[in-house]
Length: 69
Image (cartoon, rainbow, N blue to C red; front, side, top):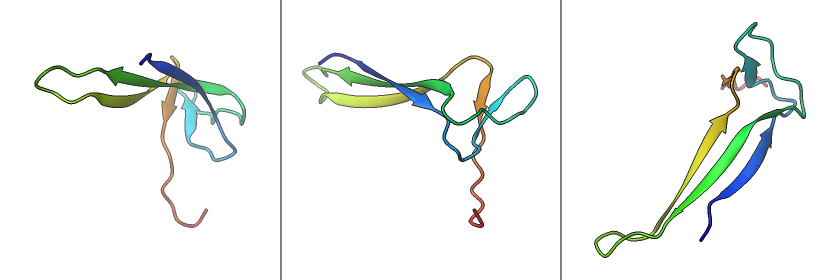
C-alpha cells in the first residue's frame, strides 16, 4: 500500500502560530501535512501503519487545553 498525504489547515481554534512573531495562523491557512506511512512488515513483524504530522517551516503547534473554550 502506498503512503498517503493529507493537507492540514488551521481552524478557527487558535492552536497554530508563526514562529517569527507568535501570531495565530488564520483559519483556512495550510499549516502542515498528515503523512500516513504503511509498513509491509517482515517475517518477524506484523504490518503497521503510522501517521506523522509534519508542520510547515515557521509554524508551531501550541493548543490550549483550557476547558473554558
